[in-house]
Length: 289
Ligand SMILES: NC(=O)C1=CN([C@@H]2O[C@H](COP(=O)(O)OP(=O)(O)OC[C@H]3O[C@@H](n4cnc5c(N)ncnc54)[C@H](OP(=O)(O)O)[C@@H]3O)[C@@H](O)[C@H]2O)C=CC1
Ligand SMILES: O=CC(=O)O
Image (cartoon, rainbow, N blue to C red; front, side):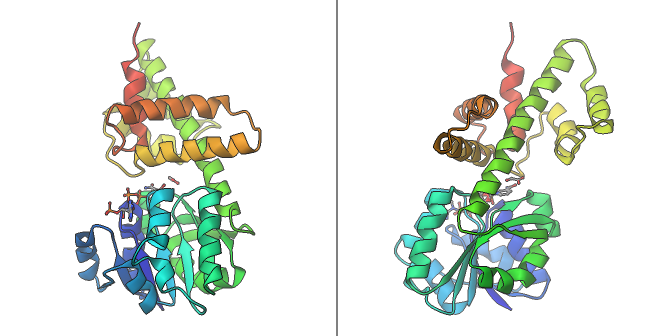
């Protein structure tokens, strides 16, 4: 099966590599084209523009940073829209808001193409090991056609109905995750400042009802101030912002998420946006009497 892949950041690189290792023919494009070279060593072809990739491939996947990037790759010169037509499918796996996804869907389908949004839950390591959770919505036929690729990329795919539902589900999940990261960071700081050993806290949390892979995986590194990026903080803040907008639209009061968003914004303003989202711990550590 031949697929196109647009966007070779932390996630896109791991996902396209996985497809190659599992026998897919992959044509890649990235805004910074030099990032394609590593994939070429594993058998990928390069498309010089998103339009070239779509022209060559029946299915094209995108994994881009944010709504502006997702829109630019579709609508700008040499973008996806120039070559999409009937018989071709476009799958956007970026985390965006439902409005962005709907705008892309309308443009693709008005040219006869099929569209699926399919954001993912799971970070760099699940992307590397094919353990993502795929939250798809849109064209059911395209979803079914994409299952061989989704089976390589993820451990479970959900089809959630109409376009927008995948984006909404992803934003709800990440809103919870970002709030949890803030509560976890506050707990680490509180344990240390009140004279406890925070490593004991990690052990105790891991044995109880709120044990989870995020605390287990990131806790020890956070205590060493190691925030090597798996999920960049700037993207977590984008997700909090988009989830809060969804809350505004639906009149859902979300004071916990709003406070978490403020911490992520503060961390971004201090230049921590490219570190892992666990770096929010650094700003919480800085607050003293
Ligand atoms: N990292 C993670 O753990 C997870 C991330 N996500 C989501 O997946 C998406 C990608 O994340 P991740 O790989 O971590 O992000 P990165 O920041 O590592 O990569 C972003 C990608 O988007 C491209 N890009 C940015 N702006 C533009 C633009 N204007 N036009 C074209 N391309 C652009 C970048 O190109 P260039 O190389 O040229 O900068 C790069 O390929 C995001 O929506 C994120 O929220 C979802 C689940 C987990
Ligand atoms: O979007 C990030 C993730 O870990 O999921």
